[in-house]
Length: 141
Image 1 (tube, rainbow, N blue to C red):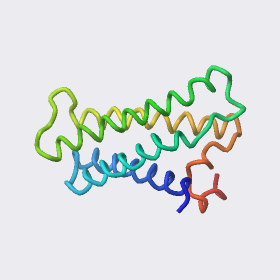
Image 2 (cartoon, rainbow, N blue to C red):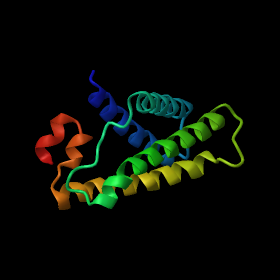
Image 3 (tube, rainbow, N blue to C red):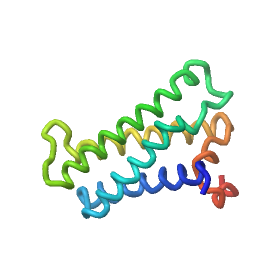
Image 4 (cartoon, rainbow, N blue to C red):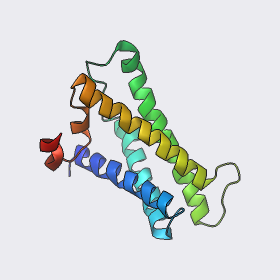
């Protein structure tokens, strides 16, 4: 499996796990554990290999400068959410880092992230969605 394929799989798996946790009110223990493992794996890949995506040439200079920081912030938010989830999973929730609140914040930030890339794909025509969707879906983009 290539790095791109693994990143795409982790990206979409984490999105659907967050949705499952929000729908289920922080859901089953196995969902919590799987979320924490996937975030740890993706975080480790990012720390070791760096961010995979790069800002496209059609972005304005301020957005090009902000692009890596926006994605780093999302990784930090995911890590904080995973930490809150793990502490909830082991039965010692942190009073200053509530898993439910972190899931909602992460879902909101992820929604803005998705809207940004949808805007890039449709307004700038830079094929931003092709970078993170599985190849079998490229013909519908």
